[in-house]
Amino acid sequence: GAEEEGDGGGAGGISALLEMLKLRKADEPPTPPKEPVLPSFDLSGVAEHIRQGASNIIVMVGAGISVAAGIPDFRSPGTGLYDNLQAYGLPHPAAVFELEFFHENPGPFFHLAKELYPGQYQPTATHHFLKLLHDKGLLLRCYSQNIDSLESHAGLPTEALVPAHGNFDSASCIQGERKGEKLDPARVKEAIMAGTEEGGWQDLREELGGLFKPDIVFFGENLPKRFFRQSQEDFPKCDLLIVMGTSLVVHPFASLVHRVAPEVPRLLLNRERVGEADPELMQLGMAPRGFLFDEGQYRDVFHPCSCDEGVKQLCDLLDWRDDLEALIAQTA
Image (cartoon, rainbow, N blue to C red; front, side):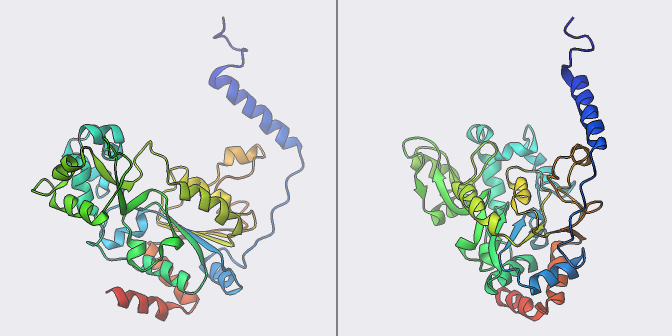
C-alpha cells in the first residue's frame, strides 16, 4: 500500500533524502573558511571595528533590555509576564495578545496595559546607549520588539526607531463605525489608567461605539508597514549589527539577522546564545541562516552578560563611559 517503505513519502522519505544529500556533499571539496572580518571575536574586536569607522550600526533589541527597568520580560520562567498572567484565568498566557480573545474578554489586556504603560519606568543604561550611538552619528536604526517606548523616553528620535510590534504612542478604534480611526493617545492613556472605574476603558468603549486598543501588534496582526519598508532599505547599508536581549524566536523580526551582508560583523549581547545556525542544514551545504559562534566563525561574537553590563563594557573599550553616564544622569 501507499504506507509501505519505498514510496518516499512522510518523515522516512525526508530523512533518506537528507542522508543522500549529506553523502553527495561529502564527495565535494570543502568550502574554504571565510577570512575573519574582526581582529578578535570578542568585545575588543567589535570596539576596534567601531573605531575603524563603522557608522551604519543597526541594533536589534528585545524584552531583555528592559528587565533592569523593572519591566518583566515575557518568557523567563517564574518572573516572565506570561507566567504571571495565570491570575487572569487565560486559556493560555499568549491569549492576552490574541485579537479573538481580546474581543471576547478585553479585561486582562487592559489590566496588563495599565501595568506596562509608559511613564512608570525609567530607561536603562542600554536605552541610553542607543541614544549615545545616535548622538555620535553611528546609529542607522534601532529595531525593537518592545512595546514599552523606553527608547523614546531615553531621547531616541522617532525616525531612529522602528517599533516592530508597535507601542503605546498611538491608538485606534478597532470595532464599529469608527473602526480604523486614530484616537488621542492622552485620552486612551487616561481610560486605561482609570481601569474599570468611571472614565475607564469601558466608558471609552461605549463612547466610541466599539473596542479600541493601543497600536500594539497582536498575534495574527500584520506588522507595521514601516517595519518592512525600512528594513529593506536599512539592512543592505548596515556595517555592524548588534543584537541585545532577545530570544530571536518571533518572526519575521528574528529573520532580520540574516539580512545584513555576509561580511558584516554581528554582536550578540545576551545571557544565553540564541539564533545559532542549524548544523544539519550546513552539512548539506546550505548557507548558515544564523550565528556561527564556534566552527566556521568569521564575523559573529557572543558576549554572555546582562545587556547593561555589556554596553558599559563596550563603552569602556571605546572611552565613551563618561558620555554614557552623562546621558543616564540627565534622565535620573
